[in-house]
Image 1: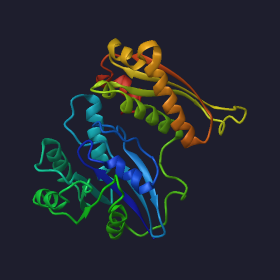
Image 2 (image 1 turned 45 degrees about the vertical axis):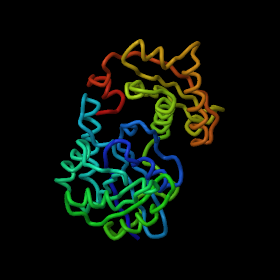
Image 3 (image 1 turned 90 degrees about the horizontal axis):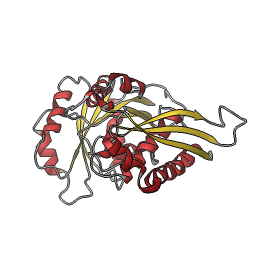
Length: 295
């Protein structure tokens, strides 16, 4: 039996979260076509008869523009330090190495553990060969893999490729645990996932979710429903108006879809109380970032 940590790194929107969900065969982390969807290092647990692998889905490595961005970059760097193997995800369609890929290369320069080059989105025309050649010239890799997180192609082969790099040992988590995080955290992520899915342009990246109250029937047996009170934090009154929508239509839609997702995950009926609050320049505020868990 092997047990270890595999850090997934790469530029934003390269498919790290999609790969985690493909590995676990369930929606463990939110996925969006928008960059910087992942804001926390999320630990998801893969189990089979041979191994337990803790995949850390890191925030996309990018050039920070504010204190939130610096937190994301630092979180990704910390995940690299604690990994037994690093899996660098790139895309089959890549034709050049961009600034964010060079940021990844810089972060990998201090990594002592094996690094596996994984070319994602191989369901697209062209295959992985060009990406293997492009990135293979940048540094030595312990192994290479071609996969498609969207279709599942090559995902099992990636697991088998990673096994020899992991230490032998007993599992750290019970087999039914899929994510090292609380239901409260997951509820906030599912809420933010709906904001990303329903809103366009820059607004979603200026929104944070604060779950202010979370009372589950598991903890309060007298309750018939899971009660959640949460706030969507934005920077301007204009962003607040967009989130609320005409006659509150957008906020109601976000809340309804998030509630359905939370009910699916927790197995409880959910009463969700949702608010929108303005906190100017919250992404630059140490106090607000700490309160939201970005510290």
